[in-house]
Amino acid sequence: MSDWTVRGTVHLIEETKTFGQKGFRKRLVVLEQDKGKFINYIPLEFVQDGCDAVDELNVGDEIDVPFRLSGRKWQRDPSSEVKFFLSAEATGFKVLRPGGKFDDRAPPPSESEAPADEDWGSPF
Image (cartoon, rainbow, N blue to C red):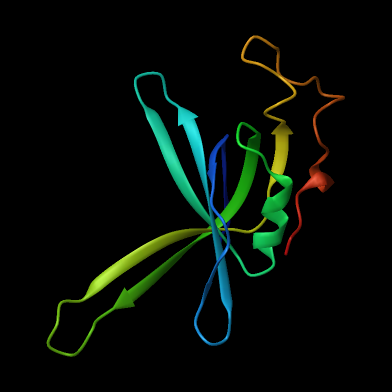
């Protein structure tokens, strides 16, 4: 399965939610991308131990997030409508520019200030 990467500014960080008897955990982080004529909002799901790694993020941080797509089929019973769901499951993150450290007028970090490739957030 291939992984992709998306870049954006953290718009929303939800609290961790727990599901089922086995305690599956999920936490939603929404990235914002300003496309000029419109704002694109991208919901990403962090699961299990990745939920704890999100504690390092703040609204306003500019980040890169590698993710994989996950699709599911659901049907209540054999005679009901079949539905399909798609989610983007984050597999880590890299903070490019902390939200509170720079403002819109500040230049992006220089090459020496940018995180190295090995500075990805927790691989969970």
